Image (cartoon, rainbow, N blue to C red; front, side, top):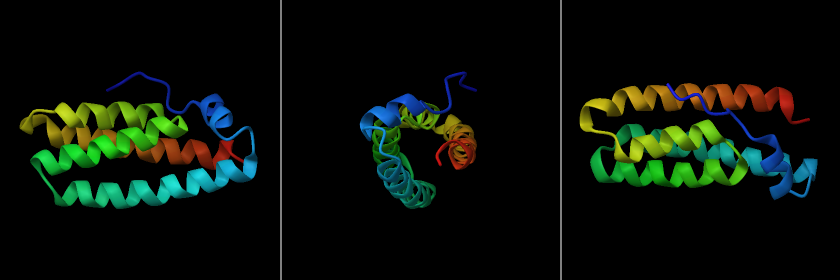
Length: 106
């Protein structure tokens, strides 16, 4: 289990020029994308799954979802026997991130 920060709110503020409405819009897009990507990831295996993890990593890093990005990065290179465990950790990081954001972003 990674011990990285869950979410870097300062990064999100910098990327959105501290515009709360823009933050909400960006986070809504991220929520939608996470749902879509995780659905695709669970339906795929191998290289396609790694490509989806790579896309998720980039999206997460761009908004400051540090732990989600770190687990997505782990999934990119996970051995076949580790994939299910990393996906489980990734799902938890997503849940925890969304939970924190629901209380942190006005």
